[in-house]
Amino acid sequence: MTLQLYAHPFSSYCQKVLTALYENNTPFDLKILDQQAPENFAELANLWPIKKFPVLVDGGRAVIESSIIIEHLALYHPGPIGLIPSDPKQALAVRFMDRFFDSYVMTAMQKPVFAALRSDASRKEEAVAEACQALDIAYAWLEKKLTGQTWAAGEHFTMADCAAAPSLFYADWVHQIGPDFPSVQTYRSRLLARPSFARAVDEARPYRSYFPLGAPDRD
Ligand SMILES: N[C@@H](CCC(=O)N[C@@H](CS)C(=O)NCC(=O)O)C(=O)O
Image (cartoon, rainbow, N blue to C red):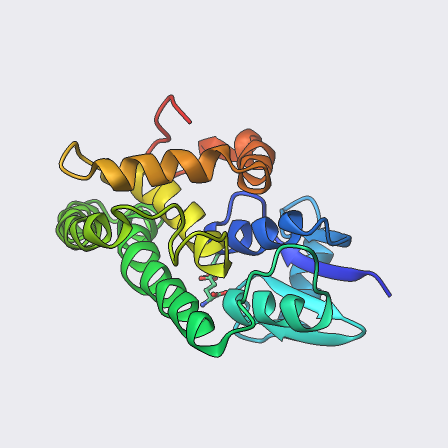
């Protein structure tokens, strides 16, 4: 039975899972969460009353949370790219970096985005300032971590890079990665050149006007 993914191409957490699916050419049907397909929102609410996405359906079973979806794919639909290392110690390092990107880059980046979506001008200013401060701390930590290594958890592309790609992609739009962080800049460019993530970015291009802080004319 074909996998179904409830997702939107412009959503950062959906891009994280799309990157994992594209890495291994895993076939799936996209159930797009767009106004043109309201029935998909109703199905999502049935599957997951919290209504956050992406949600994967595999043989009638809902798999929820982007990291759990990628872990599920690695367990039940493995491909040539092992996104979770088989060595438990290496896997732990990957899971830590995955948590780092979700908790300290994605979350910081989303705060001003949500404030702007609510058209809350005063909260937006405050949230942008908070995001800049939090992202600079995250960029500085990452700069040291990444020096001398290719991917987030070493020399292999993993789930941590699936998480890093959309979080750094959009974080840079909210608060540009400055010249003090050359390894982070290079890593973001490397992620953008990775065919799986490049495809996710290309598929999201038609929706750039959705970015509530205004998408920059690059990438
Ligand atoms: N922890 C969740 C976060 C998912 C999430 O926040 N998704 C956003 C889209 S990027 C969403 O569902 N937004 C709609 C909403 O909050 O109602 C995951 O890793 O999947």
